[in-house]
Image (cartoon, rainbow, N blue to C red; front, side, top):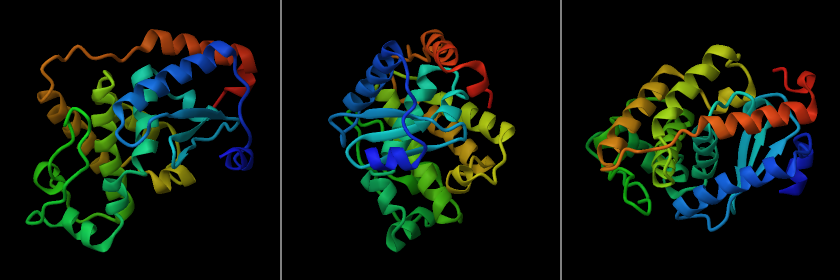
Length: 232
């Protein structure tokens, strides 16, 4: 992981307070995950939009993407999304048989259940995927997994769709990040539907976006590294 971080521009040096904040968000996601006992979030010294992960709960998020986030819930759903790419459901979406299951409404494709069983029983019956390339399919399955994960962690899963809209509006989709993670209309529509259905299963809808604490951390980062370094 350290070698990958160095190859990606190195670790961004942040204050102890911000480091502790990232650790606290990572711990909440770890508690809501069935695959990762611990989660580690590292900020990259990169002003471009970057998000990736390695097995074992290791997540790297660029300074540029961090500056686009507007709440703790958005940070949480991005971390969860990166982790979800290593789940059985997303890995399975790449295989021929499971890809056909995603495209064929007559075939059930079971998702891994989250601790509170908020994940849907089958992608095809609940989400109605249509004929789309495999990369968007993987992204939509990862979206569902991550939205269920953040709901279990006490966050609002509805923050994902507006975040995707902002990224699509503000940045060129020709960037490598968006080629692999296309924030297209179908994915955004699916994310809205995911949130609605997940929340319909949640008896207590007192969920957090936690914008104020996050924005304080964002301001602190800007002061730490200088306004010119975060002007993306």
